[in-house]
Amino acid sequence: MYEMADSGFMRPLSATRVPISFMAEKGGPEARGGTSAGLLGDIPPDALRAQMHRLVDWIADYRESIDQRPIVSTVQPGDVTARMSALLPPAGAPLEQIIADLDTVVMPGIVHWGHPAFLGYFGSSSNGPALLGEMVAAALNVSAMTWRTSPSATEMETVVLTWIQNLVGLSTEFTGIVYDTASVGLMHALAAAREAAVPGVRQTGLAARPDSPILRIYASDQAHSSIEKAAIVLGIGESNVVRVRSDRNFRMDVTALRVVVADDVANGYIPLAVIATVGTTSTTSVDPVAEIADVCAECNAWLHVDAAYGGALAVLPEGRWAMHGVERADSVIINPHKWLFVPLDFSALFIRRADLLRNVFAVTPEYLKGDAGAGAIDYMDYGIQLGRRFRALKAWFAMRAFGADGLAARIREHCRLAVLFADWIAATKNFEIVAPVNMAVICFRYAPADADTDWLDRLNTKVVEAVNSSGAAYLTHTTVGGVVAMRIGIGNIMTTETHIEEVWQRILDETLRLQAIE
Ligand code: PLP
Image (cartoon, rainbow, N blue to C red):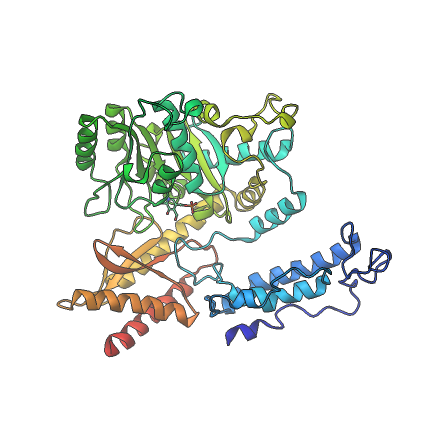
């Protein structure tokens, strides 16, 4: 089994290094109650330093050798659990043992998203500088709930958000807030929209109102499933998310939107919000935001733009087209953890009326009253979350290390690789590209003329499975226009032309092999 290859991955401890366990330290187990880890206090500083050096080497080795690892894990459900104690043993374990267990317990069940041939979803946003920032954030372990509880975390969040805004050409009329994910950011944006449409919901709730209106949210049939989740959480209801058909390029059909909105208004429903997507999950299609903004203006609905993935394209002057019309939005989400080189998790919500968000979420607990309102932003007032990680630090590291030009160059390179890959597909008999290549995602399929549709769907699915189980590459499948397609997303800064060439060759080989036996 390949995971056996993981053993010995860590560098052997040199005999001259500081002992990794603090068992033998002064004031060690005997002095602290006889357990291997001691009952009180933290590990001694020199033991921490030694372990940190060791783990830094482990991490650097991991990054360096990641492309030699099988991407997928071969463990079965329960295998990882079986390697861990069902109950936490009373005695602490030596750190040496815990670190050794990384290789035997953890690594076998890891899918190596950072592998340069991992082309699933939108690829991976991991990189060295951000990793350094994340390490420091872990060491600081501050909470950016109020300005006073961590001025640097708060102010850096604001600065980094302004950088992002500037990079993509978004007006500074929008105020930014960092959440963990776009799903959570959207829920917050829609809470603000709900408060604007039905004032007082914060106080009375929806259910308690005798005149409780039925609110509707509109999004294309290509938009992300997080919309339904937000509707569920906000008491709007999943069935009040109306999916509008998209056109042959997978963009929202605005005529169809107008029809469903008019029908709803005639039936007494309130159009709460329309979600336009810039870079849909499956094909990266871009909805006609400006036309959707017209509809929103006509029916007084909130316009939210989900640019979680596609917003990053606007870092390029030649990619600004994707954000056309976004200046008319009420809120916009861009996920730097998708394509702006900030590792999970970091999602930026930009909202025109941050006061609405504050009106919904500002609740100051007694014990924070002395900390809040020091004249600077208290981010706890803009969301459900009180404790907030210092997410901005990893973004600050990565963005400063790469610079605006470096960010743009990397995004441009991903687009170049996507076009190149698409050219290879277009030049290959019996393969077809099934959606326009707008960004760094390509949807394609093997589809010889006259072949049975179900057989083709099965075959394309099997090719994806075979490529993935090889461990040498990773792609996903999707359904586009009713047919199964293969999909690759290029977002890793370590992915090169050679990697995508090898992936393409593997796809061709597997297709040839499987179509002969299927
Ligand atoms: N919007 C789009 C277009 C997406 O593709 C995704 C996830 O892939 C999301 C929203 C949800 O993102 P998150 O995982 O940050 O919640």
